Amino acid sequence: MRVLDTVDAMAEACRSAQRPLGLVPTMGYLHQGHLALVRRARGENAALAVSIFVNPTQFGPGEDLPTYPRDMDRDLALLKKEGADLVFAPSVGEMYPQGMNTWVEVQGLSQRLEGEYRPGHFRGVATVVAKLLNIVRPDRAYFGQKDGQQTAVVKRLVKDLNMGVDVVVVPTVREADGLAMSSRNVHLSEEERRAASVLYHALRGAKRLWEGGQHDGEMLRGAVRRVLEKEPLVGKIDYVSVADLATLEELDTATIPAMVSVAAWLGKTRLIDNVVLGADS
Ligand code: PAF
Image 1 (tube, rainbow, N blue to C red):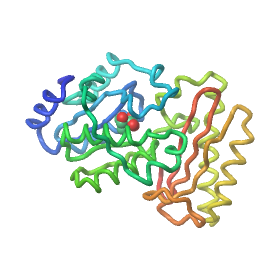
Image 2: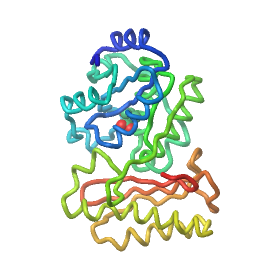
Image 3: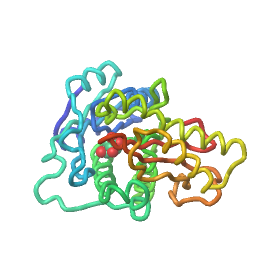
Image 4: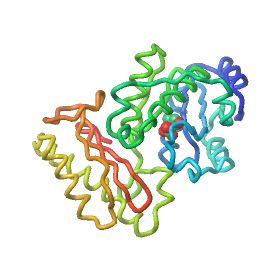
């Protein structure tokens, strides 16, 4: 496994890598959710590249960039065990050198849901993903369904800019009680951690209602909200959404493909989760 920290060295290594080449972009502090992406990519490609870069431009002022968990040594040991060929771990200065002044914005999609609460977030995500795809030029790039809106934004970006990369979306990996794996879960207190599975239970409840024939978007959103509100440790609920999977437009009638998603606070930690109607995840 080679670890590269400059754009030129990574681009050169990728040019001589075997094909097909898969890329798993991450911000590190790897958990089982990331490893599911890595294993899927390892199985489907002759060569595997993983990037580890905590991208400052996707964090807003006052967000958790300074406390975002990091453990490069552990990440590299895990990736070596999983058989990664190339790891790209650039510095902030390498990715955003003085004078860099081009930004990628997927309009519309980026302003909904997370975009309303985290303005500029998807501009940062789209820009860094475009840069990573241009540096690595993979055949396939892997993203988790856990960040459902991000997958919609990345698919749109790749299509709109004719990037010719296959975007592969991997189902959410969950803890035994249903909590979606996330690097931010480490910030939950013991009590909050116990309460946090309510997000998944609320979403599962809506999915069961939908499977039982309740397709009214407002009824489904209400059902999710009621379950969340019963949990005393859930603070502010930023949104409950039943939206088209690709456009993220809110649906009056939930026809597939649709995504039920939530963002809610447990103490100082903001959690997001989603389920896709008519699919396993
Ligand atoms: O999902 C993430 O970890 C990040 O948003 C990504 C795709 C690596 C871009 O920084």
